[in-house]
Image 1: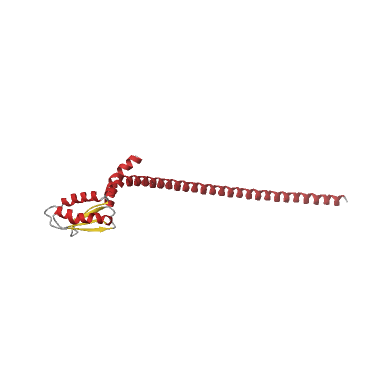
Image 2: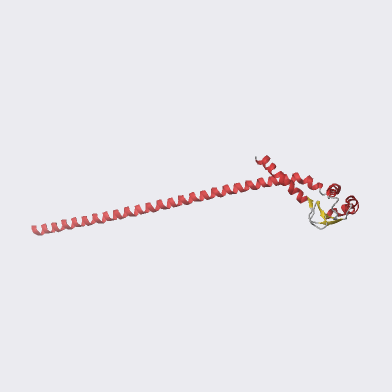
Length: 199
């Protein structure tokens, strides 16, 4: 009986010991696997955070660049608008003068008189259609008499104010239209206006 009990106890102790070892091995393995999973999860989380941070930084850089570019373009456009407005206002009186029949008559007479007396060619004029009633008698009478040669005038809707004059053969012409005058004045005013307004 003692041997049976001893054998039973021995088997029990061996089984318990073996079970304990296996349990510890399983527990140790599970713990190692859990640590590995946790480590991998932490690494993935850090990678996700780093990626998100990089995307946020890239987005911020792009947005800041876009805002700076848009601001610079808006500032340039505003400066150009201000400059154009000032130049337009400054040239308004000149544009108005080039639509006055009496002023045009005196300037046309002066320019036509500058053509050399040696030039035998007839002159051609292009004048504003709106002023045909006031200027046509002047061209045919007073101007033709003063320059002593043939003068032909055409009246165009394209000419709002001012005139073009030259030899009838079209070899060259002198233009003092409202548009050409404003362009000429604006070309000289632009640098000075920029300096005054924007330094």
